[in-house]
Figure (cartoon, rainbow, N blue to C red):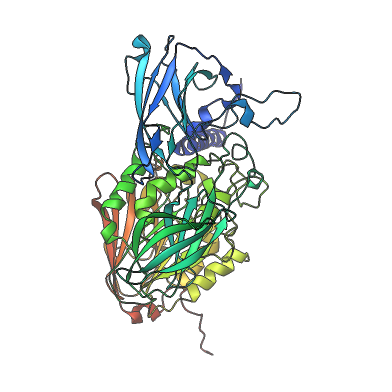
Length: 617
């Protein structure tokens, strides 16, 4: 028997809270559903009496790149553990597996399905009748598809029956354009995916002012191989050929003008492959006084409209956010998705699924990214955090699938101007502390903006570098990433950053204007005159499963919401900015504030925002 003192009891209490917080934080990310499948344990259990039939077997006859398929199946020994896997390419037999050891027969499966669903999902009497059907949504992913019926659950799957092959009329077609701002204000980049390499066809964009003459701009082409992945599952069961990623640079655009464009490939037999026609509005010039709308969120992930691949508590935040943005697209000029993009976590097929999901948005307005832990982090690869959150992708997918105007996309920090806004986007998966290359970039980005022309200065990052009441941060006692505020708050204060917005924590929270842990203004909804501190916002409720708040009360936290949502900024002119937080479920505003001020207010000194003076000076 022994006696534990008060100090020991406190230590045990805080240790328990820390463990609970870590578990909660881990659960908040959910589990990549494809990782639940014991791919290498799959075995044959083919039954001639069982069948799987998919129809139609030819998709995209009217040029569409997304189509519903009906899958019908039957088993003589049905079970609630039976499931249907969707495979692409359709041939997933042992012949497609690499023999890592010549003495060991390759496994039946060497790649995960692109999606799956339980056989009784829409046929509740399947266990009794042995018959069922599913409606599954397929996207054009550069290859054909097959559907397989497995028994014995996910961990020890047994192949019972295999379907006919289904394919799109042109699996190589150019698909899912993603717009992004270029390195100049009057440049728009168009990135898309296809199955055509440069030895087969010349990629280009046909574009021009709406209703006027069009020109052709060539595209650069990138791809990567399995060896570019840093670990499993990205270079093992999660690997899927990414096809070719093309980017064209549309230059010397007229501000606010509407342009139309089509993706094209000129085959070497002189025939052309075309996408459908899209359009976008060119960006305003830096400082332009016009109505400007910006949407910002993090951690959206992807979701399946057919209900397959269900994450733990991920349904339906992602689709709700996507659909709300599509509904309001006429009132959105640019989107910032600040990290944790699609949670592929090393299952590469999911990036195609994500680009298809956001196509109505990303094809019409610039879709700008920040890098998150689920894109970049992997041990021994230079990421600031030595964890395995990227599933072995180590940044390659995010850096290749999307364009950002960074000097080096492997260092995912950059600045971009949109009219009266200057955005400084940090990369929290690389060191940001004072003295680093990124710290110098951040200071230059903040210092170089002309606030008379661009009064609205916004700092964006994935992990919370400012303030959050998320339970894991609260347990650490830092209420943010450790060391973050100590390094960066003097820059935010010196250069009068209006708002800093983060993801990573899957909820919504807004602080007062704050500096060095103290509110500098106790107003809640209307800020006027000289900015006295930066407002910090967590907007990580884009779609991934929600994160809980600490029960501790802080004097700087003005509004918290345990729900899915996104932030919208509206600049009316150089003196008036509106901030809105909207829920993804209904698109209504649940938190808001306004900033009203003149240029002289930005010039005025406040605490630590002007050089120190003495009587001598």
